[in-house]
Image (cartoon, rainbow, N blue to C red; front, side, top):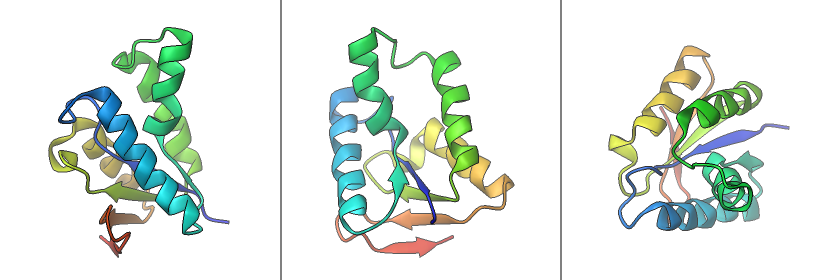
Length: 117
């Protein structure tokens, strides 16, 4: 069974972190409903930050955690939400999957159409 990692913008998302979480949650939910087994670091970590009083911008925590999950995932889905193309985090995730020779797909968040890079 293939497991996909869902990349989406967070830190500088228009409207703030809560809106970034909401947008990632919607896209990830649509993918799961469509039968895609996936993991979103934003959907997973944003509520944890609130519950455990963790700084959501502390990259010394999130980079190692995200890299562990990227290692375990088989493919990357880049959700083309506003700001995806200028996101440092999304760029880092694309670079990781590319260097690992794992497939990278670009996703239209409205139609769920995907194109392999």
